[in-house]
Image (cartoon, rainbow over all chains, first blue to last red; front, side, top):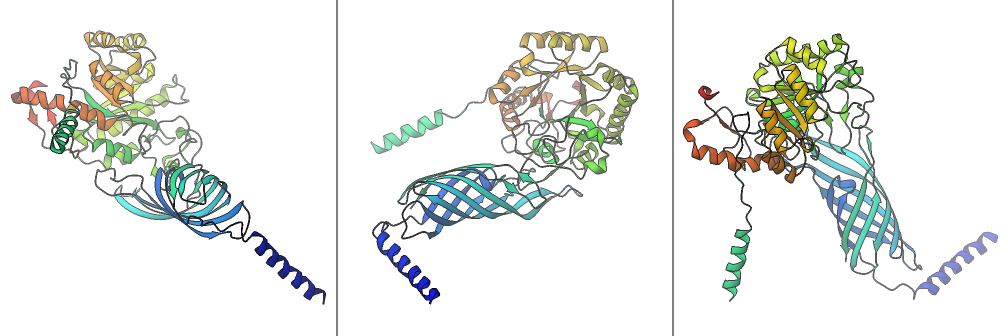
Amino acid sequence: MLKQKAVLLIILYCGFQDKSFSQINTEKMVKNLIYLEAFGTGGYGSVNYERVLFHQKNKQYPKLNVGLRVGVSTLHLRDFEGKFNPDLIFPVSINAFYGKIHHLEVGLGQTISNVVQTNTSTFTIERKTTLSSNFTVGYRYQKNKRGPIFRLNYSPIISTNKVYNNWFGLSVGYGF
Amino acid sequence: MKNATLITIILLLSSCEKESEIFSIVNLNRNNITVLGHAGMGISSIYPINSFESIVNCLNLGTDGSEIDVQMTKDSILVAFHDSDLTTKTNLNGLVSAYNFDEIQNGYYDQMPYKSYSIISLEQLFSNINDLGTFKFTFDCKLYNADTRNDEYLSTFANAIVKIVNKYDIQRKVFIESNDKNFLSILARKNERFKLFIYPQTFEEGLTTATELNLYGITISNDDISAEQLIIAHNKGFRVAVWNVETEQDNLEAIRKNPDFIQTDKVKYLVSALSATDDAIQLNFPQKFKIDTLKPRTDSTNKIHRIITKPASSQ
């Protein structure tokens, strides 16, 4: 009996919550973001697309948003012998950001890198693919409507050989 | 009207094209400046200085060669590394001289994410450069924490240099610099034909030491020598190599002082800045030059720069 009452209370509470805030948020949240990042998880710079996958509805600001970010970057277009042989770096991460316009952002992901390396035995050029972990924590400026975005993050990169590079990223872009 | 605007824009753009300055170079190096990369591609490159990638990239851009920072391991192997301590730039800690080379080989530069660069020995470097004999190298010998009164240590270091230079038959292509007079004296005793440079704090100190030890030249920061002082050094028969040449402006200033060698951090720029001068010399005095067909350089902007050498009769 007690259990039934509790369930009823929860349902009523949820219904009330939904009703009371349903008028607060009917705005359309931007879903697509494009930004250029200096340094950051791409290494020295990257072009990124982020799709907002989750947006907390029916709640007053501040709200939680979750996006999937995919980027592309390079360190060199030519190898050290001068041939066109670009390093390819693809940072992928899930970013959660919480706020209204000024957000706290936390992200976690993997970076796939396919880069030119020197074989240390033969000293010839070879390509090597590795996965590195990336983590970001920082600030994001983003409105819920079309407009500029700005991010400033601490974004360390942890390589498979356990090298921990302290790294920072600065992004400027546009949400639409 | 539209056409007129377009033509004006094109004319304006074409007038903005950078003109290459032709320099009038007077020095003891047959009036030619030897272009060396500073530890490869220099301090502002993404490649770590003294790495294989940095040095080979520098050689592929049409330079005459590269300066290399040289240190010796516990087992007397010469390695290319700049800092006194491995900690800052690599995954290892402490002095190079505290490690055997096989331990050093487990080390790598760890400043750059996604890429790994090895610490290399001179043996590894020279055995993997095509047409090694066409390039020049300056060994900047680092004697960190060494007891410079300990002739045994200095002699072992000098023997290692003699060994590598003889093995690759590059004596005429190698210049050796140090800030230690005793080490330079030992090197001179090992081989009187070594081209030795003092690396002083001041020009006056350099001139005194070079005179005292009868050295080949002086290596000095571009900021610490004037054009007039360079003439004084030349008049006394000493070649001058300048370093600390980081910006485009530094390179132009350095060229105008007429040094014999520039160790530049802007490799591409210096090669390009001197190419017009070399082209002009070749056009004006074609009979005095021959083309060295050993190795066409890969840099497209370089054209004939750096592959010009004087005939043997004029040497």
